[in-house]
Image 1 (cartoon, rainbow, N blue to C red):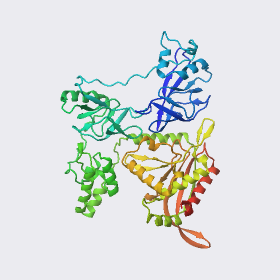
Image 2 (tube, one colour):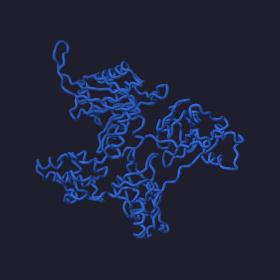
Image 3 (cartoon, rainbow, N blue to C red):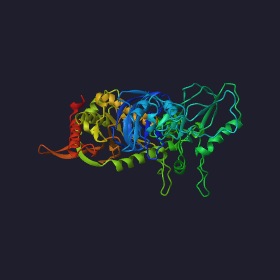
Image 4 (spheres, helix red, strand yellow):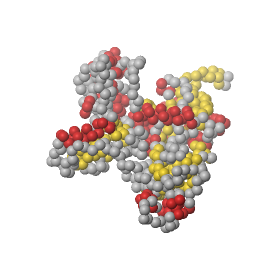
Amino acid sequence: MRVESDPFTAAGNENAMATEVRLPKLGQTMEEGTVVRCYVNLGDKVSRDQVLYDIETDKATIEMEASADGYVKRILVEIGQTIPVGDAMMILGDKDEVISDDYVRCLAKASITDAVEQNQPGTQCECSGTCKQAAPTVTPPPPPQTAAPSLSAPAGAVIVELQQLGQTMEEGTIVNCHVKVGDEVQRGQVIFDVETDKATIEMESTGAGFVKAILVDVGQTVPVRSPVIILAGKDEQISSEYVQSLKGAKAGTAGAEKPSIPVGAVPPPPLAAAGSLITTPSAITSRRVFASPRAKMAATDRGIDLATIIGTGPDGRITEKDVLTAKASTSQVSQKQAVTAAMGEPKYKLGQRIETSKLQKIIAARMLQSKREIPCFYLNLRADMTDLVKYREHINRTAAVKVSFNDFIIKAMAMALKQFPIMTGQLVGDHIQLASQIGVGLAIAVEDGLIAPILKNVDQKSLQQIAADSKAIIEKAKANKLSPADLEGGTITLSNLGAFGIESFIPIVVPGQCSILGAGKISDTCIPMDGNIMIRKLMSMTLAVDHKVANGAYAAQFLDYTRKLLEDVKSFE
């Protein structure tokens, strides 16, 4: 997850562009951060959105981006240093601009409030004002604009607003609501699952009380600071006029009101009984599905298409009970009808307009960035998996957690990265920075597209531990429960399409990583061996590599070493 730094731009000289980079608040509870890594040096040219630091917060380690262009004039913090939110970390300026030492000394001692005061009339810093020659004028960002309700808030009422769950978040989509009207809510209790531009995150209540009104619907997208819930005392009465005034206040800015059905459009199909299966293909293809994470997991485990189920939850949301009921009802349907209900007609039709989700937009932007910024070359070979297939069958007879082929490949990749560490690197300025730990991303297909959460420190874990971690991270991804920390720290990614019968393919490198390995299906293949024709189980592997970081010979050795590990089962004992 990346977060932009707060800009404070210089004033006074129209040609000056000195910019203070200060530590932003990267989370709701963050008060300070520790500098884990710095990606730039003095004199480096920095572009907007370029990663400057890795910052360890109270929740996770997060990349901090520059929000302005310029040259690094001063670096004010050291690796390992812990500083409060708002402290200056770096000064950017023009290539030939000079930043005075007096100003830097004052800045290093000043908090963000002090910096504002230093530029107010009648105040004097210890350097007698000489720092003003290079001092940027600090202009705090304007407060977020929210529409005021037309009625005053009743005494004792607490209005819970949509929190800014990330530095770049401007709006959020309500994925799940964990409370209902009348429930008692404690401060810090999870009340919503909210989809942001980065991930789906649990939102906690900022107040305590009883739920008097829920102002948003599941599936609705609203801007940050919009009112979402009203809390009050148990016997407190909230007028319907006040509730409507809050809903009206956010309706215009949220953009969440759904467009009416245009004239000539196909009307919605008739509803089936709640909790039952829809068997009409047109009904399946024309409805948008909302389901709880547990319902999604239950449907995946049982091979049920959620689009075929009518939900009994709020606003027709599908619950786990609906999935279980639908599964039981399929036994009463003929085999032909069951197949039709599970598969239905194609999800989309030719000429249809398909709105993209936030995840799809993020994927598109990241893939475009990869193709634009990462010059790749590609290596391909086949690994003999015959012995590994037998070994996997043997250990899975008694294993507490079943080990997949992906788990073997991830383990082999991690061991190979330790032997060939340049494959963990990134080009930073005039040098290649190697990763401090090995994290392997696993590409997982989800409802809205593709996501690649990271398995951390896999070189230090056993095969069984990797299998357990893989199972857990896949379940979180399918349930839309990944946190920003689950997407950080990757050095390489595995994408396996073998389950779909794909022999080989060329994957796209994830920005911020050096390479990605694409694995195909394991196929019985006739090959010459010791003068005979033998049938062996071969798997094609294609490695895409950032040529800015690694050359062909080095990457070829890495891929060959990975193959040798997979072909020798003793590597995993």
